[in-house]
Length: 128
Image (cartoon, rainbow, N blue to C red; front, side, top):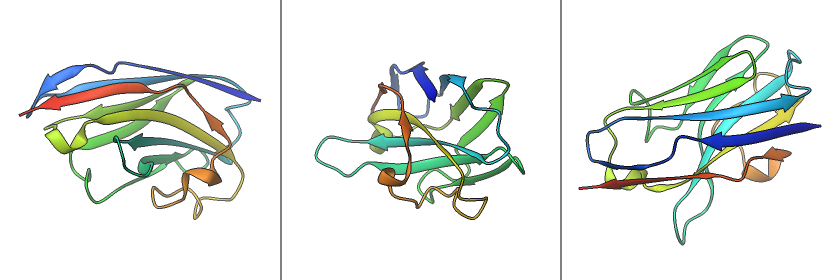
């Protein structure tokens, strides 16, 4: 079992930065653990933003955030550093995890239904 708790969401102006934090507990140290950040804006599908594969420490990003967002993991904490925020980044952000599937599985393009464990979400609002 894995438990995930997000924090760090806030309201910021365009161009600003935020760091989201996901505190993970349980069986998170397996080399086959895939950690991810998803987001969901009102009326839209939940989409993958960034992934971190523990076995190789590989990271991957959605095209919409490439170069602006950085995912990292330190012990049981998973971070999402978000820079140069845009109004279209406004959404509820979720931390997610899945055990198994290999490094090729651990990509932002995966469906949210592929991930087993979820946090409750943290709201990010970017004003223009």
